[in-house]
Image (cartoon, rainbow over all chains, first blue to last red):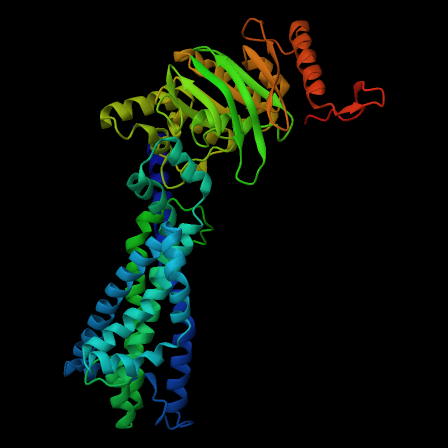
Amino acid sequence: MSLVSMTVAAEGAAAQTQRAASSGWARLRRPALGLVLPITLAVVWEYVVRMGWASGRLAPPPSAIFAEFVDLARIGDLQRNTLVTLARVAAGFGIGVSAGTIVGAAAGYSPLVRRLLDPSLQALRAIPSIAWVPLFVLWLGIYEGSKVTLIAVGVFFPVYLGLLGAIQSVDRKLVEVGRAFRLSGFAMVRRILLPAVMPAYVISLRSGLGLGWMFVVAAELLGASEGLGYLLTDGEQLGKPAEIIAAIVAFAVVGKTTDWLIALAAAPLLRWEDVVRQD
Amino acid sequence: MLVLDRVSKTYPNGVHALGGVSIEVGPGEIVAVIGGSGCGKSTLLRAISGLDPASDGTVVLDGEPITAPHEKIGIIFQEPRLLPWLKVAGNVGFGLSDRPKAERDRRVALALRRVGLSDKAGGWPRELSGGQAQRVAIARALVPRPEVLLLDEPFSALDAFTRTDLQDHLLDLWADFKPTLILVTHDVDEAIVLADRVMVMRPRPGRIFEQIAVDLPRPRDRQSAAFDFVKRRVLAALDRSLDRAVTTPEGETKAEAGAALWW
């Protein structure tokens, strides 16, 4: 190898390393940017309480919340209650997504089913979720059944509406391509409709999951002996704001993680999308 | 042989789009269909393709009535209509899903090479230019080797240079296995460059007004006197096809000046 080619190779390798380092930094910088505001607020509040400018009794400083977190984790309360809530959301999400997908697909695909079901479902959608609670408790008891059903109801509507709208707005011209290639009913669904509705369906799943997390709080606040919602009630009744905030933070972390998992799982299916990518 | 016998189309809203079109198109023949807007050119193509069957009359290909999309008939639309979730190679091989993978891969690679897009096989449709996307659409329609290929204004959305380039390229691809081509176009030059026969349609309801044979050797020189002669014949037929006939008090009919706007 000549001196010139070695120099060029070395420069190329250096540039590559630099590019890798800068892209690694860019990958870290994006989520880090979102942490600037909460961390700044936390640091300021910690400072305000430590300086004695505020008591921090009703709004404890981050150090007290962290200590409560560690304490709850040490005795196992945090893990147990998080798992209970997670299990309720998972069950409700599973049922809501299954029902929303089946009914949404049927209503989207068949005008007859749509005309039959959609008006009633739209009327039911207008009912505030909390209004169902007494009925669900009467029908299903105070335990898991009513809570999971309430979450499922919350998840059902965004999934149903998202899928119905997505199927109805599939580009007619692409369906015609399928027809020109003599696709049968199932092949048309698999090769044209399913990929076409996937972006809107993923958004509806994420919306449904968000509502699932909202509804689990409502369900657990109304009567539960375990779960993150129970920690909220417990903190309120015992006058422990740090426990309440620790439970809220746990909700945020677990909720965000589950949403991220859906986005991550769906990403390979949506690589084709021609959208503005801000990265 | 493709035979259309008194093909008519009336839409549910009462619009009588086609009124008894009867034509015969031989194997390997290239026919251009030209006419004013709304004269039923695309309706005719859709009836032949089976996408929108005729309300009356028959479309028969090699003795077989066509009432739904058929494996022997391919179609290229005005827009490429590539499926955005499939890569370029996936789009080209869309009509070969029932073939073994090795055969599919081989034919897709060959088709992409023929349209000069081998390097784009692994790319997404969003990464293609308009001309490249239409080439992929052409490859997709040709790869199952249809006996009849229908083209519905396939180059109308492209710039003049790309259009000319693709017209030449289409002839090149046609020469591979010489399918019957039926091309709907608004472009008289395009019709004469490509076709063996130009059919001029007349509207309300759509019907064949005049057929003009294009007996020019290929490749055709757009600047030649012979080309210009055929072009003037087609333009004159178009003008006549769209003139509003006015009946005089004496019962005589004549064309109304300025009514011949076929574009």
